Each structure stands twice: as C-alpha cells, then as structure tokens.
Amino acid sequence: MTYDRLVCANCAAPVSEGRCPVCRANRERLQQEGFLGGTNPMALIALLAVLITAVALLAHQTA
Image 1 (tube, one colour):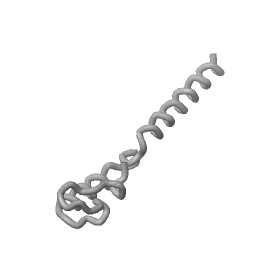
Image 2: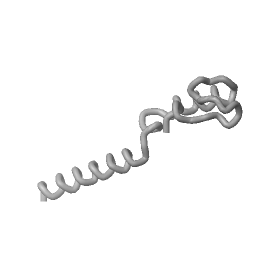
Image 3: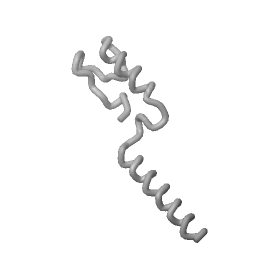
Image 4: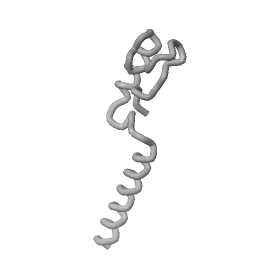
C-alpha cells in the first residue's frame, strides 16, 4: 500500500502531507520498505504465478 492513500489516525490528514510526527514517521517507514514494499498483494501473487509457470515450462522443455 502506498502512503498517499493513508489517513493519519492522529491528525486525520493524509500521511503523504506529513503534518504531525506520526505522519512523518509512517511516511519515512513506508519509503524505506524498498522495491516490493508498496506493491499490491495481488500483483505479487500474479508475479509469483508467472515465475512458477516459467520455471515449469523451462523444466518441461529440458526434460
């Protein structure tokens, strides 16, 4: 999930604006999650399915 859609429970403002210390801390944490940290879980599942299919096809061709 990306922080631009989150609303802070402390100040009721978007986390992306960073109005309070809680917003700023959560925004920093979400930015540090890395490459796949903000990726949609369904996209990760689809990527995993594609990788498994590719490995299965490769194994089938070499056998």
